[in-house]
Length: 197
Image 1 (cartoon, rainbow, N blue to C red):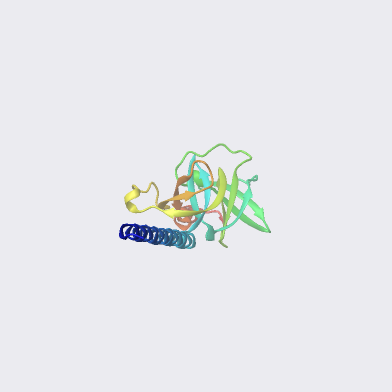
Image 2 (tube, rainbow, N blue to C red):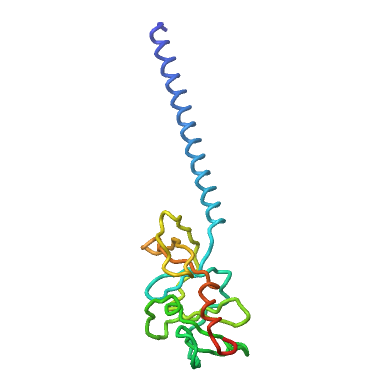
């Protein structure tokens, strides 16, 4: 073999080695990125708070899942004379009276007309037992809290922040207002002169 042929063979082998090394490096970089992305997704899934998404006054609100005992279909309530305007009435559940508060009215929003698709969200509290009447309880979902730069002033003392939820719907993300239920209920429960309400 001539020298030029040997050089060419060495160059071809070096190119093959380089391209094989480059491919290996490329594959390893790709795997590293995928593993890092999986780890970030897993961390995100673990750290995301969950909320029950409810509709009220043609808006979406997030109630902390820990504060919700049960979602019930709406039912007839016994009206309470001289009760706060947001108090829809009372109904019996397991031998106890439950006060029903219209969420939209309590937030100063226009409440929707009563219909069969409404829900009562029974809250985890003993005295008094309270259910919120909402236009619809949609789902429990993971939420991403929005930073203060992404939000404007809160409309109500009961609204503590805003969040986005990721759902499987074609709309993708939805923005909702997060509620502090004790702040929401405090003025209604302390102003009521009706026992048990």
